[in-house]
Length: 431
Image (cartoon, rainbow, N blue to C red):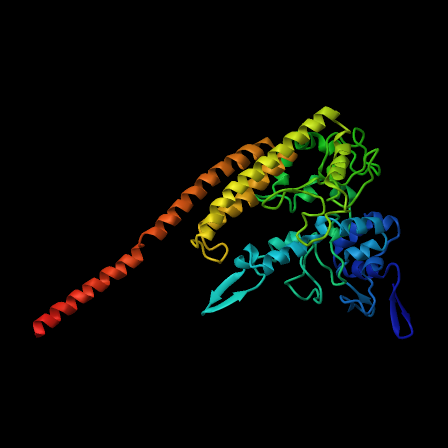
């Protein structure tokens, strides 16, 4: 019930349930919470949603102040270790990566650009349901009344209190299920498609095949979550988050990544790969991160198996890097010759070199590390070979067009000659 204390109104432990239950408002939310670990532990709605009046996202709700947005920092008041780990991970930088792309007038910016009555308009309409749905919005100085930032559960959402991250991206409200977060379907919300096809690669892999065949028989609710006892093959969380005999669990999904496979050129994660100039993860060397992942693999595979697999995957990434260098040179030479405009993504060859690394290149590299042979080969290196041939052809056509008068210029010249001819005949008759 709601407790009246003088001029102040406070929530009692069951106030939210009393009102929402009696009015049948958000019945699914009530059911989810009642089935949750939070309810078992006596964590009430108010423990997460009650806000100080001075909080940037506070609003009056039948007397007390609440916040509809439960930030990562709010969760961190109880889950301090998980909050700290997530804050230093690549996940927490999702919204910042989006803003870099938008402010630098890269693809998200251009997708949002339109000219109406001669006036150029740029907003986030094209990306609020696209890029930002996964990367997260920036709610700094904004409220849930603003559709440009809310609703959003993007993994790197910048909350009104300034903290990065949305725990509900993986542990969805209001059940906050560990089982749900452990299953690969949780990660599949964002990690899929032509540019980051981890979902498709995992499904193709032997790991994914085992999961799809027998995963419904595994013990997903086990507190320890032990390989060979609770599950037989790894999921996304097993490799990137779960513990081993030698390794603690973590919410820093970057702490076991020895390569950064997203940029045009892959680099080892020795605190240099982050475009914001901050360390990747906890500042460990890429070899230390590799050792952590090795510990995960060693639960099922021998040392020789793991070492050889990593060597092959490393060599595949290095091969891609060399292929990208050659492809990029084709475009760079055109720029040096002044044959391309300064505007990005206004010529077909710019889309082609972008897809070379952002689509085909990522598929090849990620496939190599996630046991996806079809993505290494036919969705990867075959497409890279085809792209390179098309880049060469495009470059040749661009140079040919610059060396000879184009059709529009020829038509103008022909029209001028005709006009001069008519004028000459007219003047001759007058004379």
